[in-house]
Image (cartoon, rainbow, N blue to C red; front, side, top):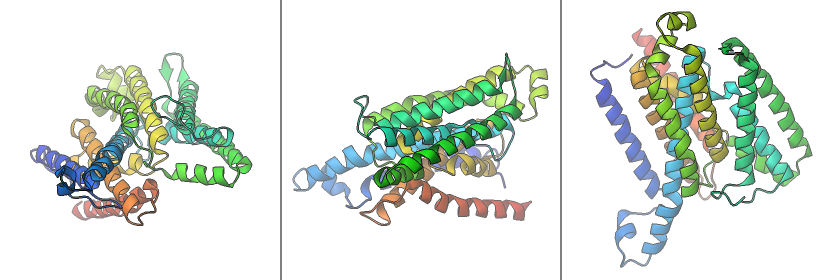
Length: 337
């Protein structure tokens, strides 16, 4: 059901317009609905409060949702290509489990107050350190000199994930009720702590991952044929794999630290993009990034409005929205096969 090559740029442009529209709609939708008139008419008494809500609260949240969604989706594209496995996602290298353990440790051992660096909290710092440490451990276990074993990395990722999960459960056992609730909410993902400083923290790794993925897009296409064929065609497989895994680990660790463990996007969005644009990473990389950003912005908007003033975890909404759509695409693809 791939769209034709000629129609792909137009389709990508339509997706970008939809992403922009979702972002604008998210700015004016919420517990308090705000219109353009109240935002720009300085004579209105609610002008200042409306401007504060849109510019200081909702805008950074929309930007953070877009960046986190793009990182998770792009990370999934890269991991599925590197491992040649449709079930691969960034959690395979231990990022999610390590970040979850780091966040649990920070919540149980320390308070979730700011640490004075870019308005980060101890939970964010703990999640970033935990995710990066787990990724580094998996990477080192899979590395043998200058060679790199994909199968060993998969097994090491499973082992480290299980170990981090067990240690996380141990943290749950010792946590009091308040800490236990905070850990549970963090694991379900959410963007309620968004601000411009957090957006700036995530933007750098997001650009790094996008640049690395685009730079190696042709190498990724060739590596889909297998490592031996890629080496025969002149691809430095080890260098490409090492560079991309490091970029994915840094970007996903940062996004998880800022938004918690938002499931589903890294696994399913690459398949959605692939069903529309085919396997070539030239179109797949930008398409998955746009779709991931679009989906998480929509999910976060729904999460903070559907039961307002109570907010639902964004990770729950992403699964509820994305899985039926993915099943629809799969069914349609089978019908057209």
